[in-house]
Image (cartoon, rainbow, N blue to C red; front, side, top):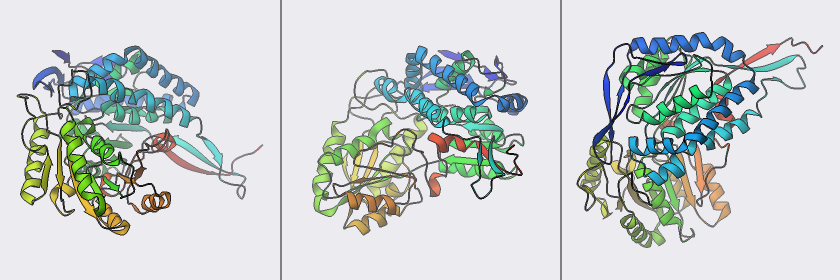
Length: 479
């Protein structure tokens, strides 16, 4: 069993003030795979103090030098990327091939994109030709608290830590206690890249402990959080007392609108995307809206695809989905599947209980409900598991109405061969992102939502600017 009890504060691994053990469980086996310590107020205070002391020198470091340190982190990843894939697979259940191909590589993907975006930033720029002696300057916001989730651990750590470093901020990271091993390894990357003492600090803890302490800490200038809408509300309330900046990337209930003229692979693509990562993605297309003229055929196809998806241990190679992260999550998903049955939705694939032939592990059967009404709980609540709801619609206006009738607004999807119709839909849908005909967002595109999905914009220039303050200067000398 892996034992990782120390925290990383002021450039060194240090023992917690009052060690409190927490077991990390391998969701494929239900057995403990690691022991970590959870921090308390003293650990949080020590990390924040180290970050505060390091801030003046780090914020004064040249942008070019900060970029060099980030490149050093990339070099460390490249030397140890298999370790990262193994850690992610074990801690949160991503199948090992997925961990190697998607989960771990999110680190170099985002890091390189940030370095490209970083070159575009003007740290001091003219306001405009009408004001020759006015300048707009960009300053790092200060010490930032970064709270990251378990479902895409390196994706979210990279989307927060790297732009904060580039912006000149100093950091206290609290990774999810459910999946801390990848963040501990990332911390080794930072240390071995030579990032100066106190610039990056890492304290393990839970939301009620270290998470709340960071949110309320008077010396933290900003909290960046990815997780549930419930926790986002709590963080916002805790942060309000000190008026710190809060950026939230929260839940979603994405609509995947499939018109009659969609390509023949649209339904299959939608089901696979919903089930990817065992449904544990905030931007998953969990509501499939289908035009009535192709509805029956789409339901049949969706059921066939879901029934063909294999479920297996994270350690096994191959194309399958793994378990969900823990027993609590498994129980919530089972309860929501039962709700769907009780609400009268038609179960066409999957259902309650473990998959056939499985007797341990937090595995969920890929599940599809048809004839769902958008007022049902399974259409309104984020289930965060491999559960798809299919809803019929009459026409374009009806599709827009149903898609926008949700508290969330992260990602919506459109499938149609009609370019003009796709463009109308993209502009009418209330979400931070719209993906159409299977086209993923390009490098540098911001990730984030509206409404109860939060207001963060992570990635690209926007992701760096979230960690910067704008300063207006008049009377600038041009001599």
